[in-house]
Image (cartoon, rainbow, N blue to C red; front, top):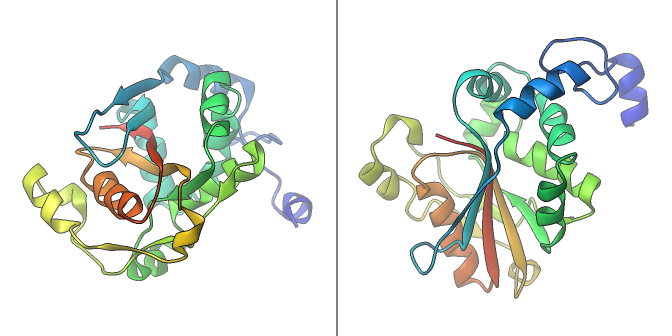
Length: 213
């Protein structure tokens, strides 16, 4: 199917628009490298997740790309992000060391408006490239909430409380899990999702985001 789609819609670099089979031309790849700076933050009993890893700061070109990806119908940018990240050896090795990858879910209302979950698209591609199990139907958002970006830190914590649920618990039992999202701001969403995963048997959780705000 991918090959057929590539014939109908030839892949282009998500940044400059030039034809490129990897959705990222060499010039734009080199430009992204200037922004790339992997950071690992560890939490000792402070959060429900054990670590947070991010690759960019949410500013400049990266902010523009993520906003286009989420809100301007540029879903194809997931290939640009993934094809850049898997070339970074440290990123590849970290992802490969976990059992499961799952995206932070969005509500049905938000999904219908946008047409896709931006985190799920990236997880699905990473799953194929790195050979890690994808569990996209395990964690779901049971209610629509006020956008987190419009709230302060204290309000964000209350806003996401009890917003997420688990099904197919056996999938996560005693597993090392990657919880993936696009942006990390206060960590309220990641912590609420991780709380549900840990309470249902997840062994270890690492939160990975493209960027930190």
